[in-house]
Image (tube, rainbow, N blue to C red):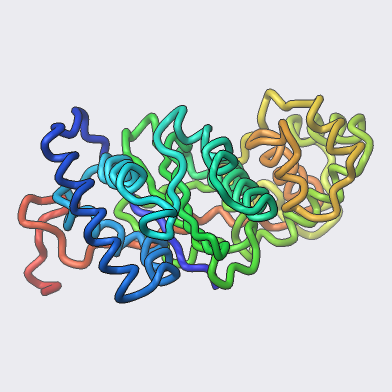
Length: 331
């Protein structure tokens, strides 16, 4: 299994003082050098893929433990303090525009062409998965990738929920990863669980992914008809079964009103054989994948996993009441 996970953090405004950032970079440089010597580069990336360890690492560098800024500041300090030449580990990406420049940053490095292509693919597909395949209401605004010349890598990215103003951090690691689209995060943690999440990365959504690939190979005109069918709640295959379809339909089934039909046509022409290939087609985003998933369940009765793949992080609460007051009974 891959090692990774997520963590929920509240949005804290403001900027890191220059004096603190300078010290964080110097400390990151020293700590990573010692870790390379004592543990090796692969172990460093393995630990970066653990959301709990990463949070503790940010505290070690001197940053606030309970802030979304820990992600952006710590990865920024790493990017500016460690290099392939001095540490054997490269760092690319960052917040906002820097995150979108990750492929460019990787391509400009003195690495074998084959490795560059591999890392760029990982960067793009991991961002697509956490933005469109796992639809939890958090939009990715930060993306950082760490890697070695041996091809090992770790991805740390963060999304923001515009309504709750909470951030959620996603961790990926290359070691023994089996699939980019099924259970790619193994150590999911956080303190805010969402009620309705379209979790297409779940193993329980495997049939939905398969049906989506089959659907995209159909003529787009058929998809239009199936979407209209779903929107109007007309005919379904389950109508012919002894099942109350209204009872089985989750209340949060919302068919997207806008779909990139140009991308659908492109996917139809390509006819991807796997879901991983489907999501890499340019223009195929959250709306298209959601529409295909909802057609799968509303028309064909395939089950979707709507559970948030998030586990609770905090066992006892904190003295400041964050994320909740300490419970003496639990301690």
